[in-house]
Length: 92
Image (cartoon, rainbow, N blue to C red):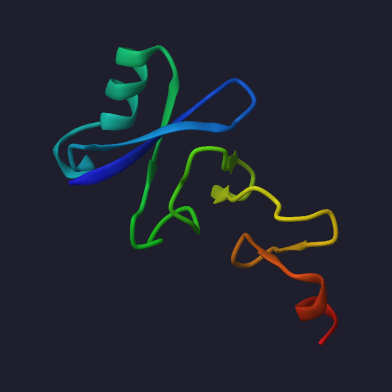
């Protein structure tokens, strides 16, 4: 079992589904073609693409990572984990 995220034209995740494991075929392409929308595999255990995708997350192709929505304007992105760091944590 694998999980896949559907990505819109602005790289926002619109849906996450459970699908077939990629060891049995190219399911990203299959599901993408079936829906007419880009499909990217995500990992429930964060084994690939840094974070498990969720609706509203952004897929950053350069980082090959799913990035959650920014919680606030002062939060900064941890480039290694692609998670947001609270302002008080960033200055500690």
